[in-house]
Image 1 (cartoon, rainbow, N blue to C red):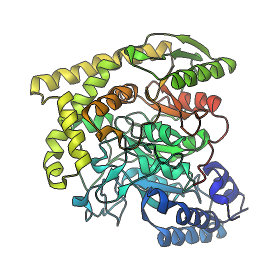
Image 2: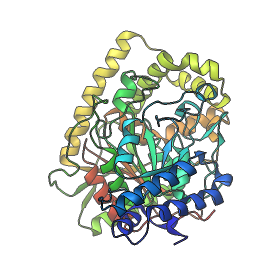
Image 3: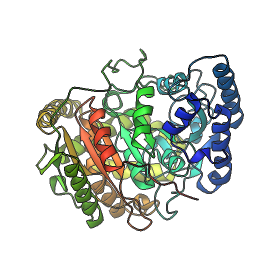
Length: 461
């Protein structure tokens, strides 16, 4: 049983429900794996070994008393350091928040605990969760377990690296512009950005967010298997009244036509040949499974991308510029300066026009998805970048920003997106993205299982 860390969450939960292994055995195996590989990766920046083992033993005693196993009983999970976990600091990669200790769990943490998950550690993020790369002055840099020369992605780079290397089958991440989907892509695993209103969110340490974060930021899971994403989503999505955006929507919706809009290069974005090949391979798999896949032009993505960045930066200027100066993180300073170049400060009429445009684009997209329930498109236009490439120069930053067009656009309309790992190009991960209508994560996951019927391979660090 020493290699239980290699199993998926679904496999672990089934073995525990059948009383074939104990929660303690499952958790201890993951902790041994963390001990072996985390020093080289710096994915988990706060280990919780003693707490995890104590919770595992308590769970075993409860099972011995005849209590029912939860859907995630014995499943080791990691939590990103930008959400509240009682008794621990919500650092968000900031030295200035090293002492910002949460008194209560955020909704997503509370929901994972209710489902029986055992939290084994807190995962790294860039300062302010501001990049698609993961490095900060408090916790250091995270290494991609597939290839140390590549970014592990961001901002949930620690979560992606942890899942890919076997440090827990499910990683919690957050996504406002690809921060779940891109680390999954870069680390060769799967990542689900749920719909706005699906997974409740609130950090008491920070209070309510401004409108950009309220409309676009979500929590969701990363995993090596699509069934694990489904299992994690069901747990994360439980009701919590602290989030006024949360909706009691079913996890499975009505039957719809099995149609996929194939969008290889939306709005003229440049897409690397290996990614185009992965998209064509994905389209062929979906056709073989009975989906109708046709090349169809979707509503605007570039406009949605530009407006999303405008809204995101307006929020950052309002809420975080003083913190940016106090932290003085070189990477965050550079990224903020480059983002400011792309998104000049806006006045109230421009802000109101941005929100008005969001209504129009959301209407266009939801109308389109009524006819084409799934969209198959790139996660990124480029293969995973060299680590820290975005801060190499303004030109490098512009190249990264352009490549992430599809990831940035989707959150503006509150839509869900799924990054699915496909066959790698040598040692370089590659994947594709599926997009669906709001609260239709079930369609994403069903198509994702067609594309990835087996779990993604582990990175044997």
